[in-house]
View 1 (cartoon, rainbow, N blue to C red):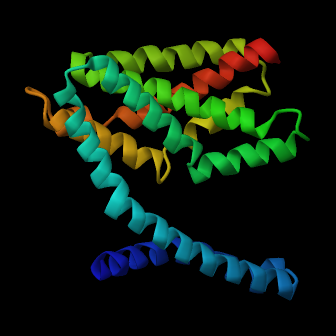
View 2 (cartoon, rainbow, N blue to C red):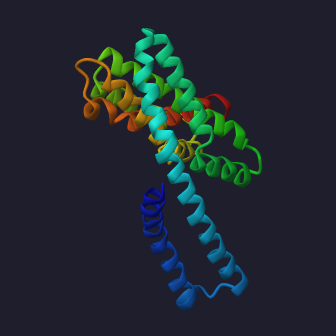
View 3 (cartoon, rainbow, N blue to C red):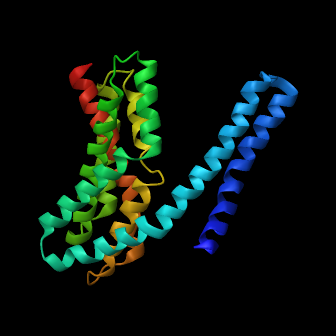
Length: 231
């Protein structure tokens, strides 16, 4: 436990230090923000370090091992429907709790003046991730070509981008980018690795990776389709 905490603390400090350092340089040379605002930034940075540390340790100690275990146990039940359903449920649950997705939803709510409900965007993104994560797990079982699935999915994204309202397209692509965060990403990967590890003829490398790129297309397509329908 202490070793994990130490390693993760170093990783978090390395990740946060460039941002804090850059803001400090800008504060001294160009920006000159009010002292109380700058101190608030430093205090928030310290809280962010501790929050990220606890989050990453929790993912390492609990989320990833459990995801791999679930992925390895599901094939023993002998039901593809169960595997797909559980994958959908996990994809939805982790995306709803994903910090990046929550931030995007709150920003959409604030910037649009509640014209676009943040909660609607949140659940729309979650459904998109869940649906494509479920298809990705089905692909591992059935042996479908990931290259073909990615080609079709991204081709659909390009086509819908020309048909959807212009103001929705940027939001749709941001919706896809925020889904590969600290919760949904590890869970999908761990589930896929656990699933592929117990299936004959499957490789944890070729079948366990590439799924995030596919799952992140789901929110883009979902937002574009709903945008075409409602706006």
